[in-house]
Structures are given as structure tokens and as C-alpha cells.
Length: 157
Image 1 (tube, rainbow, N blue to C red):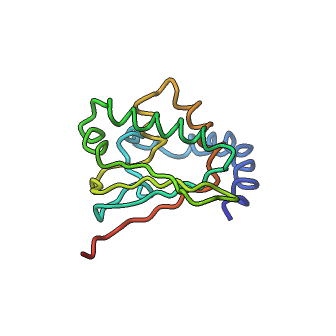
Image 2: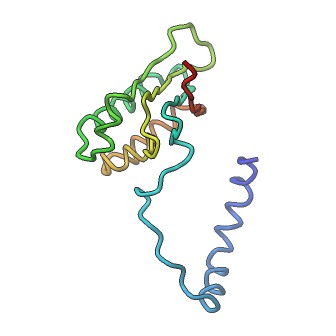
């Protein structure tokens, strides 16, 4: 579904956007300013239950690329002046599967405890901590990762 939307709806929107914007500007008052992107917390990368996991399925031939980006994430967390990032750093652990892999290598980011209101989006963390390098790091990450899965955890014992 997402592929269909990206393939068809996005090009249509790009073509029609200037026309729609001109019509809308003539009829509607301007919308209120939006808060900066850094203040919004994505529910995809928050763990309100206090613990969570992110699974990264990585192309086997791109493991070193992924690990280089993961290393930069760790450096940003450890050197950040942001008190939230400094609290996240010691509880943000990174693992990789040691079992033989065929299609994808699996990496796990484990957060325990996770700050309930904090954002654990690795791309956003790179953007905040390394704005000059963020785009290049994002491209390396996107090239190496096949998919990402999120799992919130609740302690039972």
C-alpha cells in the first residue's frame, strides 16, 4: 500500500501542489506556525511502557555501513549536551545476531529503561547531533536497512 501511494499519489501531488496552493492561498487564512520538527516525538520511536526494541534487518553486504552509522548514533548520544539524550545513552544498547544469516543480518537496539516521553528515532538523533553529516548518514542507513520493526515491552516479572 505504501509503495502504491509513493508511486502514484506523490507524483500527482507534486504536479498539483502549485495549483492547489494558489487556490488555497486565495481562500484560506495562513495556518498557525508548526513547532520545530525536533520537538515532536514520533510514536513509532517512543516507548511509553518503559522498555523497547528496534529490529533492523540489514543487507549482509552492508553490515559495515550499518555498524558505522550505529557507531555515530552512539557517539552523538554520549557527547550530547541534551539532558534527555544523556539519560538515554547508558540504557541504549546495540546488539547483532550471531546466528548465520542468509537474507538479512539482524541488529537490535534495546532500550531498558526507556524514558517514556523520549524520542528514540535514530535518524532524528543524527540530525540533531550531526546536522552537517545527517543526510549522508541517512543515505548510508537507508541503503543498508531492508526494514525496521518496533516492539514496546512491558515487564511481567
